[in-house]
Length: 555
Image (cartoon, rainbow, N blue to C red):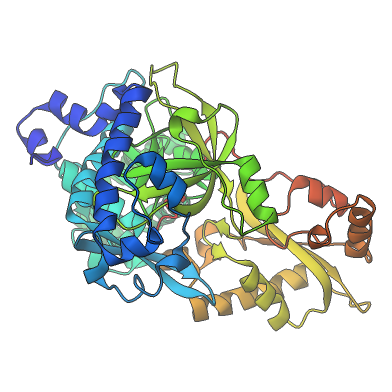
């Protein structure tokens, strides 16, 4: 079977575009035909393996409709201990690679997912699409060229962000700086790549958007402190720095990476991708093409060259969507099985929890990723794309995912507070955007006339969270350094609540006739309404900024 790199080397640029990016020309009806055909093939593979039959709870569906009616929704714990043990004999297809990310502290330390050879073949075409789309100008003219230089800013290919970068390298034949990046720790890799890029130049950059900002700041510092001996021995690097200084002086500001290089491709992901978009563009001179991806299913959706909503990818996963009202019902009763709709049934302006089933011998079956997406329109009128457009809205579970800080659960925060020996009545926490940066805001009511400043509580709880990370490894960003290095400050804030806040909240809810199980506010991700009842000031919150990733969660 031909691969993208074969078409690129043969100069068949139009065929390359059709192979990788042809999905944006599909009608919605054609999109759904592909989805249902590939799901029918996947159902047969699931029937033929032990773990697939376990996920389907003994059901033997013959149609897409029967599959959705008979097979229950799953979460990662349903795949344990089999995936944790890497038991390959019970899978639908032999895995070509196992990718992984952090798990849930105190439950499972690592989340492992097998990807088959056929899945990787299709994944490679999707990765090629990302590179081509990110290279487009405003008119959609793209760059198809081998040996573009790419600075490494991701983990290894065994992480989600790393596998996307690796697949793009395989699809389009990019050259990695440094060439032995996978063998190096991240800070050393960036320094080595930076020096090579000064001498050789570089064209492409991709990774978690928070990391692109972090590397950009490192390059700012590196360019200012690069040694005279290195520059004198590398004339091209010296010329690049002199030219960069001249550009920055003309702009009357400090030198930025965009003064040193003119990038042709920038790809960004992660749960906070939209938050960092402007900063990435400020540093690198080009906005990042945002993708929505994850460990469990590769790439789900991507922006196109208008840098607005994201278009779903048809050939890696089958998509189902839990309407927000169904999700609310499940929140009240976790034994309730939410109903789903398909992509041709979603409505513009509505929020949905996304559910995926891997194609091509993957194992994730009616799997709840834990994300809420928002359908912003049923088609992209500007580019005439006849597929619903989405943005990442937020988490649909009890995880708080913060760039640089990792995936934090209720248990993790509770343990940190307890270990810090802070006497409290109750607490609630959520992710908020403060000063253009994502932070964890802990709302807490102290007890027993305990007196402490918000700053001292931040210091105590933050230190305990770092200790817990060393124990449970919940921070997927630790590869890049500590949270303060990645984000430039502590990604945490504390809001002290007045005495009696939680008892007043419960009394008010009782007066409203609320069920006894719903009297207390949630510990994780309280709504604006809940916070208003707690009488706290309104804050700017991560609720679908125009375009938000994550998740490459993607490491």
